[in-house]
Each structure stands twice: as C-alpha cells, then as structure tokens.
Image 1 (cartoon, rainbow, N blue to C red):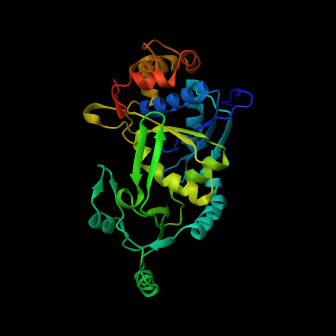
Image 2: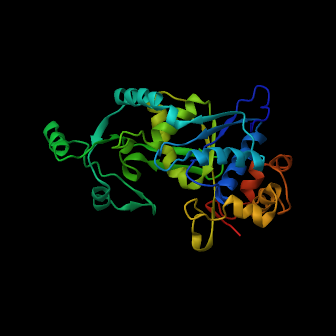
Image 3: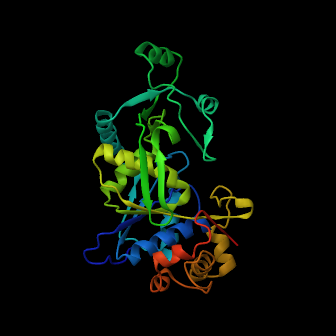
Length: 316
C-alpha cells in the first residue's frame, strides 16, 4: 500500500484528509505535499483518512483513485485508510458527551433564514444570530408541526480563542461575535464536519494538522469542542491556497489542473511535484523531484520566511 516506515518513537502524527468527491487537482497536491514535508521533517508519521461525511457526493471510484494517486505521487502514509462513514457510533457518543458538557439545542432555521438574518463575516462566514437558542418547548413543537427538521447547534460563550499557527502566526477569534453557535449535527441526521474531525483526530492520534488557510477560521471552533470533550489539542499549520486567475480557488468541481491534465503536461509524477514545489517555494527550482528528494533540504521556518503571501499563491 502507500505506507513507509515511521520514525521510531515518533510523537508527531499528521494526516491526509481528502474528500472522495472528485479527482485531485494541483491545489490538493500542494496542500498534501506541504503537509507531508512538514510532518516528515519533524520525524513524524502520516495517517490517511477519507472524509466521506457527504454521502451523496462521495464516490467509491474516487476513494480508490485518491489512494492510487497519493501512491503515484510518492505521498506515503503509515496508517489507514480510515473512513468517516464507519464512525457514526463514535460521533454519536461524542455528541451525547457534548450535550452534557455544553448547551446543545435544536435549530430549525433554513438556509434562507440564515442568509436573511446574518451578514457575511470575513467575506465567506456568516455569524449565526442565535435565532433558535431560546425557543420554548411550544415554539419548537410548532416548527416541528410545520415539517421543519431540526439541526443541532452548540451554544458558544463570549470567549476569544487563539490559534498559534505554525505558518500564519497567531490567529484569534471571538466565538460569540465572529462565529456564533455552530452546527454539530445537520438536519438530515449527519454529523457536522466540526464534530467529526475533532473526534477523528483524537482517535487517530493526530498531533499536527496541516491544511489550507481557508480552514483557519474553523480552528477555534474545533479547539472549543476539543476542550469541551476533554480531547487533546493538535498543533496547526495552515498553508496558503493555490489559486488561478482573478484569485479563483482551484476546484475539483471545475476540474482545474486535475491530475490527468498535469500528467499530460509534465509527463511524470516527479515533474508535477517539482513544478508545484518550485512555484510555491517548497524548492528552489521547478526541476522534477520526488517528495523524498525535497525532504532532504526542507525547513519549515525557512519556507515560511520566504513567503511573500501567506494566504494565496498563484498557480501557473
């Protein structure tokens, strides 16, 4: 399989956590490569987790393809693959513990309700205004009688949570004013990403999470859940996003810079890895290279110091 030997007694555990909803593209490869280099440079090991909470969009063909592509690119892992679709019992147990440790309540708001009630925050995120927080039993019964299915939110305090990010530096978010009560279970019964990823990271021993900077604003919420559930808090490193023209994020849905097209353009896996490493500063040139070859000279502090922009890097 895609495993390589972990360093004896390694205490750092990172993870690949792709969603099997499409073919890998250059942005996915960059984030995975950066994570692999950061964790391996610390003598750590990697876990592979397929994040298939979205049952409708997750496809078995992509599960197999993702594993083959990681292997082809030389992005090895030591444990897994693990699947979120096998983990509902663990999420349910955590949900019940959370309900005892914090205030969890049903929310009947539709997407239209949420858009009408709150303004976007930081460009993408909307702050939940607490519409359903204090509904009486009769008000809840009325909404259920109207056919509304409840999602579940956790009530957050007026608390500032700071992430000491290894790439972005300190990032602080006030949960009450910059996030609001957030979902831990959806109205269709599926557990929300925030809860699932916290439970999985703890169960799989993940101690260093490397991912795109678009998820930095979710990290204080995950830290809040970790503390409420008594789970260990990993370290975090949020790397820049690889973007196309006009600051447009690369997307599986749009088939931007998909792996097949990259292989056609660069000829080999080493050609792809070398080009991505070169344009993102992970290497000094765009010459073909394997992840193992890049690891020999990789230094996280030096890489961060060379970054002109920690939020986005241009794909070309």
